[in-house]
Image (tube, rainbow, N blue to C red; front, side, top):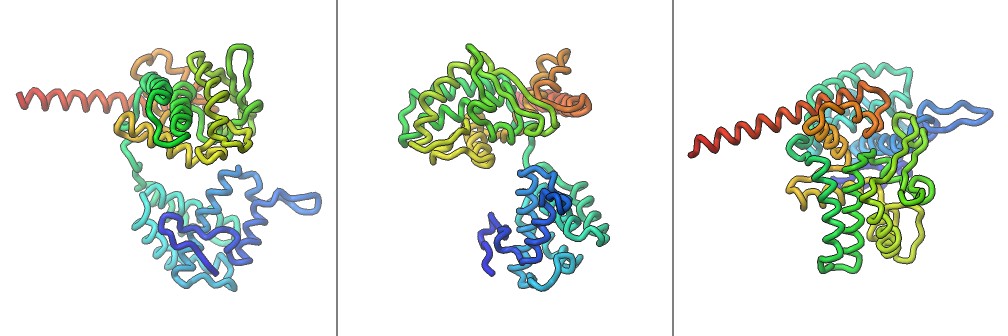
Length: 353
């Protein structure tokens, strides 16, 4: 059995899993039929299934590299506290704490689905301990930028795309696309899943002089339809992207997705995240991932317009007011942290004088 040795992609693909593991996994995600029941994971979203595949694939890859992956051994027999301890040590050596938590949590979900009758309390305790000690990869407060600044920077980046001398043929088009995505996320900070899936005529539609976006309840995390208009300032840039830059990026290929990569294919979530982080680092000195734009909007409202905090729920598409309140409270804490940092800096400057 072959397996990947790249330390950055240590994940055994499903096609290389032991036959018993593959059968159990397919049964878990099976939608069922007239003659059979649906699997316990049939309701999982495609993104969830893919993440769990990778979580379990990483565990199998660890076993393969440790020469412990015996095809004749049932999955529930392989996962022992001793092997889990060795696996956890490797994860903590190679990954950030939240990534380690994600891999262990995913492994727990899959193994419980494969062997529901087994008592996995010991594994759940490990996951709880990791959850209690996991730390953010980055300081979110320090990397956030106000939404109005992000929006203006996105507009400026598009404007500069046409005036810079491109190193490569598609540089201008890719820069314009990136600037448009940044401005869009600053004004309408939708979730990565919805940003990635955008298709022409289905999610992005022209109504008169304006563009509108629409996602069904099944396509939205909170199971409610999501509809909004593109800001008027982005109407002309979107027209330019669709008429000029998107066809150039396609390079003769066809796709109904809105966001096209430099290779002529629909952009994936990791590709979009990479581009957003690269451009924001270039603009502000600190990278922001697409999800951080949602925190930025809450922080901007808390700082500049706290009397209208109620609009956070509509802007972020939350299902409940509780989610919006939680984000608002975090935003207020971020604002307070920034103010405190400014005060400390001012005091230090005075002390130096």
